[in-house]
Image (tube, rainbow, N blue to C red; front, side, top):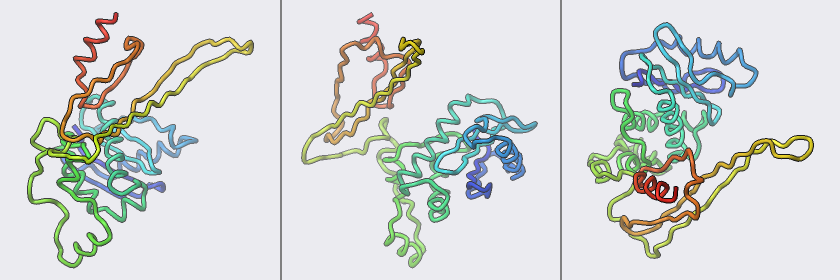
Length: 250
């Protein structure tokens, strides 16, 4: 899917360059920055650009651009979502994904990209599984790595990579079984000069912080589930069961 990946700073300098299916010349980054300079705001750059031999799919976050080159037409939303997941993993590891954090941890960045993609195809994107293979570096860990020359990549394949639930570690135990749910809602509305609502839309997300031992089954009931439309779920949610509940109410 992804032929090459570039991460550039705010001035166009290439910070990270990784190739899977042949080498893509850096001239594509020059073409990309020509498009950036045409826009008043950096967020106005089209997420998909076409070149005679490549498609360029990009995102802008943490003041850096992540650019993926594709040799053929693929689902663009899949690539965009994966690029956002890359930045999320960097934030999970380094606390930030800005230019300074990437420069300070460039070796770990390459290790993460190596595990997250297999021949350009997304392979592993769960933080728990990645942390079991590549340990986040601390100050002492960096000093030991320099002194001993040892890598922070584990030699043993973690259990989560061969299970059907890579987002959950095996044998997790907590002293107190708690789960915290937070509902975040946003209301977008257009109101005319007379105060009448022309159109309105409610979007939201349910954020969960699970501190439950093992892998228990949880049932979350909604008063009116049929109003929930255009939704996406974490892989742990049994989507077929949710669809059956909504169909029953309809």
